[in-house]
Every structure is written in C-alpha cells, then in structure tokens.
Image (cartoon, rainbow, N blue to C red; front, side, top):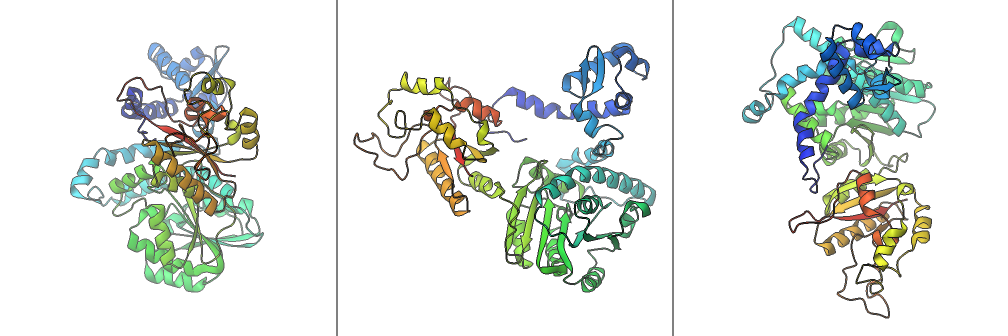
Length: 507
C-alpha cells in the first residue's frame, strides 16, 4: 500500500501497525487444522471445535474472527472456506500458498534487524549455514517460491501474447520449472531449456516434465560454465526469460548476465525481465528492502535502470507490462518493439513523475453521470454560464456518456495546487499519450478553467487549452475517486488537504 498525501486517517496508521496480526491469524488457521477440516466439507461451530484441540471459548472467539475477516463464510449456522481461503490456503488447491506461510517467519527474523543493516551495511545479517540447515531452508524456500510462481506464471503468460506456434524458450534461473511448465501447457509446440544450479535442477521429478523440456544444470555466475552454455545454444532461443532473477544480484553481475545470455537469442528474439521494480509500486519498493536485509547485494531495480542494462546489452526496445499481483514484465528486443501489449504503465509512470501523486487505471464504463451534479452547477455556482468550459457550454450528460462509450481505458489522476499547474500537467499528459500512439487521448480537468481571469463573452481565448471539468459533465467525482481508492472529503478547515481530480481517456 501507499499512503497518499490526502490520507491523514488514524485507521491507516492502525492498519500499518497491526498488519502482522492478520498474518498470525491466517497462519494459525492453517496450523490449527481448521482450513483442512473445512476444505473437506462444511461444519457447524460445535463440530469444528470438537475436531480440533482448541478450547471452547477461545476457539469460538478465534473462529468468529476468521468469519469477520473473510477467511471463513457462514451460511445457516454452517461454516465454509471462503473463496480466498480455498484458493490460497487449501491443501489441495492448485494455487495453495501454505509453504509461503511457513517460510515467511524465517524472513521476519532478518526484518526485525533492519536497523542493524542500515547501520552496518547490506550483507551484515547473511551468515554461513551448516549443510543440514542450509538444505532444509533451501527446500522450504524452493517450495514457497514454487507456490508463488504458480500464480505469477499465469499472470505473466496471460500478458505475453502473439507468439508463434513453434520456438525455443530458455529460462535463466528456472527454479522448479513452474514458469516453463505453464508456458509449455499453452505452447506445446515449443522446446524449453531450464537453467539453474545443479541442486535446484535436482528437484525436477523425472515424471514431472515433458519431452520438450531439457535441464541445463549450471552456475550462471560462473563465466566458464555460462560461456560454454552460450556457445552451445548460440542464437537458438526465440524467448529468453529472467524471472525473479535480476533482484538477486548487483548491477555488474546483471550487466554481464544480460550481455552474455543475450547472445542466446535469435535476431528477432525477445528477452523478458519479470521482476519487482522500485518505481512500479509500493510493493516493489518494499521488496528492495527485502533484498537489503536478506542478501549480499540483491536489490529491486527501477524500470529505467533495467532498461539501461538491457540497452547496454544490445536491446534498444523495451515494453513494460504491469501484472495483477505487483510484478512487472519488461519485454526487450534488439530492434522492433514487442507489439503484443498496450500497457499504460509508461503513461502512469510519466504522470507520477510530472506533477501527479496518483494515477489509477479504470474502465470508462464504470464512470457515471448524475443529474444532481449538473444541477449543482446550475443552482449554486456563481460562474454558471460565464466560463466556456462549464455548463451550459460543456458536454451534457448524454454527450458525456456517448463519449465514454467510445473508450475502453482511462486513467484517473490526482494532483495538488496550484490549479493552473495541475491543468498544465493534464495537457502535457494528454500530449504524451497522443505521441505514444494513443490517438484518442483526451483529458478532463478538475476545477474551473484557469487560463484567464474572466472568459470573454464572444468566444474562448484559449480553445487549444480548454478542457471541461468532470463535474461540469455531471460526473460524481467524490464517488469516482473513492472507487479508485483515493480518499476525498469536503474541505472543512483552512489546513485541510486540497487535491484535484482529473481524467485521461486513452483508447
């Protein structure tokens, strides 16, 4: 999550300070056997308590909380797993994350010592482990990462489209092969090569991989081993995957990896860096600190840093695609840009770098025009009929809704005073979108037009800059902002936070 400039709520503070409690609750729901019992079928509260070792009073209070937070559902006095719990906590679910729950407490040990790392430097908590301890930790790590990969691999390959029926994919740092198995299930005509350390590749079960998947056990940081592998498969890959790999290493190591491994690709091949990025969202920024406390030199990079590394490796074209659970795919090629995506990530990044503190993608079909909003313009605004961007000169409800019907994607934008600067930023973003290929780009402003003190009665003095406000078209801006996760409230005090809301219709 990110605390917005407009958010001054004590509730947010409480959510931040007590977030670990929900993890403990979720973890105990699994450890107590409640999840497994309800995964097998519904039960009453009494039946559930009898089947566990929970004390009656304490257990009832705990189960009531599980219902309250949505981990369980209750219908006609019978308890069921919620859809969320069935998906991520159920033992037999294809997307279960139970090993992630087991592994997280190990990571918390280092997070509690964040201050030590900040004072003594990255790597100060990393220690040599005895073989048995290392083996157990590695196994749990691989199980946890494998579970997470089940979800993230689906997101990635949902986003990467337009591939030919046949080709070769090489996964650098393949882990347990989840990304490749998901890829081959969708593209059975492809050949796949999985590269990773020998003890990691050993986790591939003989019956768990198809005939078109080949294991390549090697240390990709060893120049000789990597060089031999590249020489063997030089120019044979159509797709090269770096998934959750670059964050493990420093810039110099990644530069060498991308430069050397890039030689594996055909001339028109694609290189995908799938990872968490510091500038993409708050999760990516938090993951950077995760690397800080748990690795020697790992980090989350910015998209610009990664694009620069790719360009140095000969990949001059990069397309960014946001994925649902906070990761990002940077798809790079040597010459022709990847044509399979119209991601708004670059536009959102541009907005956040140029005067806006929030940019949220939304479906224009979710925007509603209300008669009462236009009525408040007509019966309550001293500027009614005096500005060329306001009623009755702006779009009426019918015209606004007809316009929205011609678009499928939009960005809601939030900014701060001064208003003139906010409106300048909106026009700049509209131009940026147009130059990026979104020919239908059109912005709606927040607040009254500010290009002149008073509008001349005969015509607008700045028609090239004139844009209607959302309110003038009947849009309930308060409801729309809250729908997009932006808290808004009427100004009651002189020191209340002032924010403006605008809209960019994209395509």
